[in-house]
Amino acid sequence: MEGKEEDVRLGANKFSERQPIGTVAQSQDDGKDYTEPPPAPLFEPSELTSWSFYRAGIAEFVATFLFLYITILTVMGVVKGATKCSTVGIQGIAWAFGGMIFALVYCTAGISGGHINPAVTFGLFLARKLSLTRAIFYMVMQCLGAICGAGVVKGFMGKQRYGVLGGGANFVAHGYTKGDGLGAEIIGTFVLVYTVFSATDAKRNARDSHVPILAPLPIGFAVFLVHLATIPITGTGINPARSLGAAIIFNKHKGWDDHWIFWVGPFIGAALAALYHQVVIRAIPFKSK
Image (tube, rainbow, N blue to C red; front, side, top):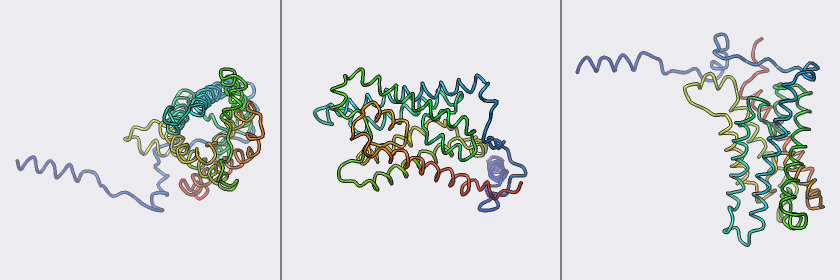
């Protein structure tokens, strides 16, 4: 018995539990156990001759197409119901958006990074995670995929019924101001893009390797939670491609009147998330070269 107690005592004291905090923790880069990816160049002409570049763009197109198809069809199903109780309701819509992001990021992360959202692409571009060439290409392919996805839903629903049901277009709900809608989009996109940065951070993945983490899971869950909170305000954009695709196919004043909010808000939110993660959380500008 005494021998077992001695083993327990030695085992408990074998490793120090004291962890560096504050600026001490930030200065431990000499023996860092992770590789910091180099900043992406602003322009990368060689990308234009690489098949992997176009393959990534195609992956973004297909992913955004599938995203709009499933999510807008879910929205249509809820809107056409006589009561919310007879449909999946707001919770079902939120699960459709969050679940599709989880699945699609998982499928495409190894090919394109699984952005599926111009705001995410913009935030990662500001953090020098990809070149301007690739960022623009991704955004174009995302928007085209979104338009096609919403178009297929309209084909299923029929032009008249699709128009009556609102086409899944984003707009500021009655009782809220444009400022309310803009604020909801900024904060919602901040939550999403900040989660993307945190879930894919090289330092976190290395130092928290004892905690199994699947990056698409927190990203999809963030989308789900933001939708729960902001569907009653704006229908939840936080993705300019999603808003653009639905607006173009719906093509009525209701879909265009507040459309600027669903570009300005997400881009501001993405920029703030990139700034917060890079400057405050990672303190990259303050690290010694």
